[in-house]
Image 1 (cartoon, rainbow, N blue to C red):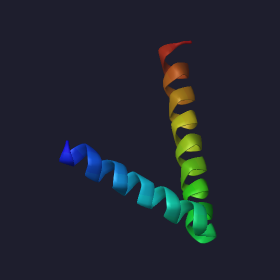
Image 2 (image 1 turned 180 degrees about the horizontal axis):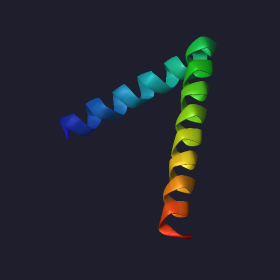
Image 3 (image 1 turned 120 degrees about the horizontal axis):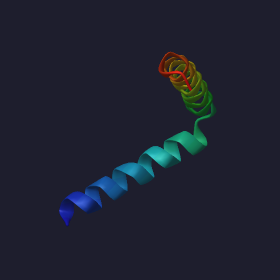
Amino acid sequence: MKTVFKTTILIAFLSVMIIYSKSIQTNLIEYYNNGISFLSSHTIAEANIAGF
């Protein structure tokens, strides 16, 4: 139970940091978009190799 409580506090703290820090938010959005494009390109490449 203590682990769940600590994890909840950590998530809440990180959420507040992300909401109130515009630079962190911008960096996370950029990182997320790069990750999505990376996964998309690899998924498309694997699908073409597989013949779909």
